[in-house]
Every structure is written in C-alpha cells, then in structure tokens.
Image 1 (spheres, rainbow, N blue to C red):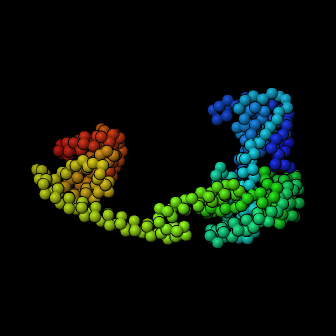
Image 2: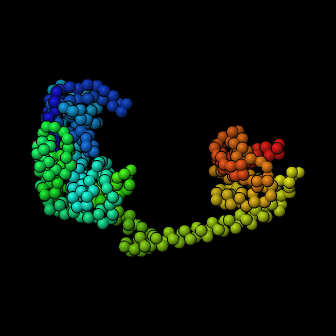
Image 3: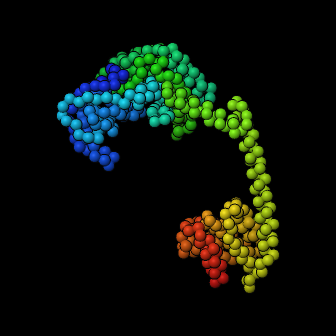
Length: 402
C-alpha cells in the first residue's frame, strides 16, 4: 500500500478526502490509539528536522504522523471506519512550520554562499529553531550579515518553487547540498537564492516567511549551533525582547540604549560590595572566634571543643569562616550546625587528633543525611534539619569517648 503525499505539490492544502486502507489498534505513549493508513494525505509526518502536523481525520484527532517508507501512518485517538474520510490540517501549526522551514533553507544558503559555513543539521523546535554550522566560529558580523542577506531575499518576495529531478539533474542546476539517493528527487527552489532537496512543507513566496531573526550562536561539539526564528515567532520574540529591555531600563533608571552600560556598572558595584562584605564576615569571624575561645577551657587532653547551633539569620559562608578561625588554634575542634537548613560543619586543628570526616559519617549514619570532607574539615546536611542540636550532642559524646 502506498500513500500519495498531497503536501508534495500543494503545501497549502488544508483539507482533503482519502480512502482508509487500514485502521489497527496500538498503544501510543501508554494510551490506546489507532494506526491509520490512507491512500492519500495532506498531513506531514515527522521528517528532516520538521515535526509532524496535527489535525483531524473525521472525528478522530491526530496524535502523531509517521513516515513508514511508502506509507504514511496516522496515529489517532479513536477508530475510523474503512471508508472515505475527510481530513483537515491544523493550519496555524502548519503555516508556522512552513515559515520556519523555508526560512532555514534561506538562512543556510546565506551562511554557505557568503561565509563558507555549510549546514550539517536542522531542528525545528516549538519555540526556537536551530541549524548547526561547520567551520570556524561565526562572528557577530557573520551572524548579522547572514540575517540581513536572508531578510533582503524575504523582502524581495521571490517565488518558492517545487522541482523534481535526479540527483545528477539537480546537481547540474547548482543544488546546495548533493544527495546520493537514486530516482526522482523533490527539491525546493528559492528563486536566485537556493536549491535544496527536501520533502518538507514550504511557503509559496519568500515574503510569507515574514522576517528572519537570528538569536545566538553556541558551540556544539565540533560545530556551531545558530538559533533563529521566522514570521510570527520573530514578531512575538522581538516584542518580548523589547518588553524585557524596557523593564530592565525602568529598574535601572536609564534609557533603553544605556541598559548594557548601566547593568555593567551595577554588576561591578555589586561585586565590589560583595568583596567588602566577605572581608567583613571574615574579620567578624576572627573576632568572635577569639572571644569564644576565651570562655572555653581545655579538657584533660588540652583540647577545646566549640559546639554551636546557629539560626537562619547566620550566613552559611560565615559558618565556614568561623569554623576555620577556630581550627587555627592548637587542639581546637569546631562542631557547628545551622537551623533550619540542617547544615553541619566540623573542623579541627591538626593537633586535635580526631577525624572530622569519620565523625560526620558516624552522625549521618545515625540521623540520615549526606556529606563528607577531609580529616580536618567536613561538611554535611541532615535529612531532618530540626536534628541539628541532636547532631551536635552526638558529636560531643563521640569526641568524649575518644
């Protein structure tokens, strides 16, 4: 059985009538469904980086459309009689996909012809589409240049045609990327800009792409992934970008074109203040550690054990500074906990003679939690944050036994 692909010659067909060749029950994503094969369809299956169409077959909703070689399999949510059926395409989804896919052909052509960056893969996402480029990293000038060139072709409103021919015939016409498949191939031609074998759905004229907006470029293994959007997506994202820019400008108290400079200044000021804050925390920890040790006598082994439960207003970083300062004094051990997060910090001077990591493991084994460290410094977190005081008590008892 062969399914005639109506979208090959008319991607704008929104409705069609076809004969149901088979309808078999299956399980689709754990749900009951039916696999339907028709003698013809306007519904596009997932293929070539483009997602499948949605729509209806009679009263049945399309869940998935799959390319099975000669046949197109339609996965639907209810059984369909072996008779003629009226089908319709979710047009908003289809047209969006056509804008993105034709835009991809155009953008890939501009990157390759003008900047020598061939496309090695394409993905049409639900929000952002991507192409992976091979070669050196595209600079901002290259990204902008490809975008401008693509938009110029869009504004020219050039025809987008479907061509058929063998690989040899298409190669003689200047196809962008040659294929090795035999027989008659389908190709999409953007007049004066691109010719590329493709089985996907496309607009009829470049102006229907709307506009091209290149977003960003990131390293993906040996290639460079370029994010882009076209048409309605570009309009929506550009509007959202402007709203974010306006909100940032309002919060920073500056003009739109001053956001980057002002944000840089604010970040620099924040970093400077954070550095000052860290310095003050460390000096405070030094002072408090000195005062604390003055009030704690040494035991028979000459050790001092400082055990303290901090409340939530204490900075986690402060506990680390405080424990470090205490552990700088000969034979001193610090057992610290923080409520209500359940953090534990155990630290000791090397001459204290204990093992903080082993001590922490023993406590966590009894109370639950995870953590670890070295012989002289260990951190952990209790499964039940309220047991901080209990953890400190157990720690003192274990040290006393030693």
